Amino acid sequence: MAETMDLPLEDLGRLSLEADEEVMVGPACVVFAKSEVITLIRGGADKRSILKGLNESIASRVYQARSGTSDPFICSPQTSAALTGVLGVIAAYRAYPPVLPQADV
Image (cartoon, rainbow, N blue to C red; front, top):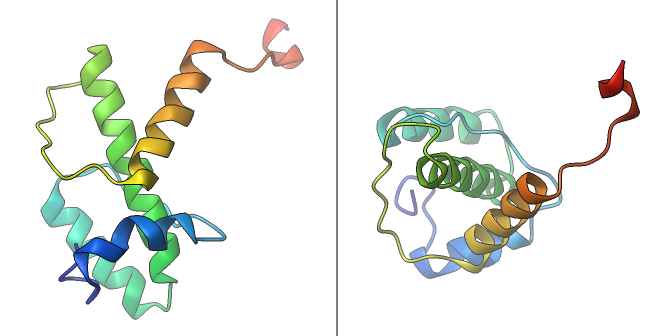
């Protein structure tokens, strides 16, 4: 993705953490994600927000694979601070889901 986004690999985690908002990137394979990222960039989306969305998508896939809720997802990227943070948030949410009063209805 660094090459696709024309960014140095070592900057991806830091830039993701700087994002003010998240641009959702579908949890598909890398080829589809790359096409989606190119479309988002051409549409004027902020690269930092795209990176934040990519981290969310990867974290979600990793969580699903580790929890046995989807097919195995093999991933061996260098873990960034941003990805680690997103994984932590997802794990906390799953462990302590919010109480929604309307869910009891």
